[in-house]
Image (cartoon, rainbow over all chains, first blue to last red; front, side, top):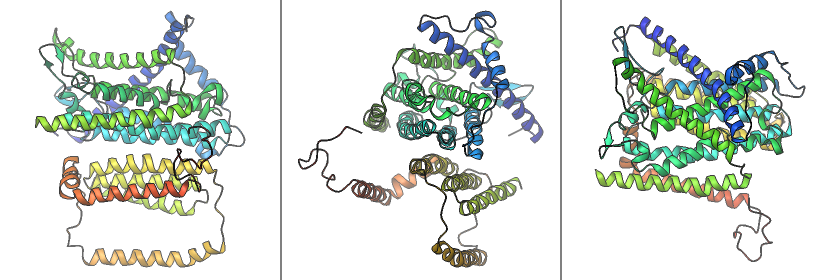
Length: 347
Length: 183
């Protein structure tokens, strides 16, 4: 390692604080971006009163959530009712700790990766943490003791378990090509160019179908339009979080947006070349540009999320299940077969 | 040293959650305790250097199978467990049996712990994905495939048992009433 225990702890704590602050700010401003963009798509202005361009709106929202009355309905099963939003948010924030956003850096003689911790099987652990995220939603729906919540929770668990399979399989093609589960190694495989100018990102190296499957499954995993059946407001009031108010509701809200950022980061790392991009200029630009490219790609993905929300109608529930099992799943399996066949031929 | 401390932390959590599983009377609390047991087992696997196994333990057992358990409990809206005469008998016979089994296991492990060598809590990762893949897909390919066929048979059996009598012939059979709507 070359690090003493004290430096290791200090560096880790600093990185955790930075990651949390950046992530929570990103979450806050994703909500701003969403309201602004959807507003413009629907020919409205979106938030514009609080601060310039409504930029202070997330702050005002946060204050509102804190000062609102925290109402607990009388018939809920209290331990789980309280634990569910905490579980959702905690898992959503944990998974970001394994996402690398850039190369190793050396500051004052201390080498450290630009992520909280570098794990051999980082991708699997992120998948494991996100697969636990369904409990927050399912338990919220069940413990609220209300039919709309229960229906929302049931829909969410069925949907997330179904689409997790397509999501996992869509990543297998990339894993076969890179031969590693370490996110850093997967990104390193994608450096450089083919035929002088096309970047060697996995999406350009035959994983286009996998990227499409991942995109669709990721929308379903994060309960976003067009797969937001668990909280379909026209039929279920608000789905699993119907009975939640004030900060507990805000925790579900933050968890949803943090999950969006996580799946966007994974898409960037696995398909879009991570932090690779043109790097030039003086040393400080060289240091910052990779992180900038990473952030730009994640931003593009989130922009697409919001764009789709402003464009597409919601699926019907049987259509949702049929799409997941009869279309995405076979497509992902076919992609795994073809990819492994080609990789085996090349060896 | 740290590994030993972590071993006792995860071990205590696993045993405590397993006890809670039995003590709780509501099925959803028991299911959640089982998830905690599985998560701490994943921690123990990680301590023994089986990182892949630990991740799969969480993804498959805690993240998929137990979700279905919780799903079914929610769907049936299962109430609190009832205590019957049978459960009293189970308690009288069960606890001595558990003590006996645990004693037997402990005695066996303590008297003949040299073959095979006891597991090292080194934190070195020995069970890499590559090693496991070579075991499953090369050395034990046939047993692996036979197991998958076995699971397929079990799934088909479940479908046959779950579908009401007369509908097992499939949606196209003539004697069946017209299909209501595709589910």
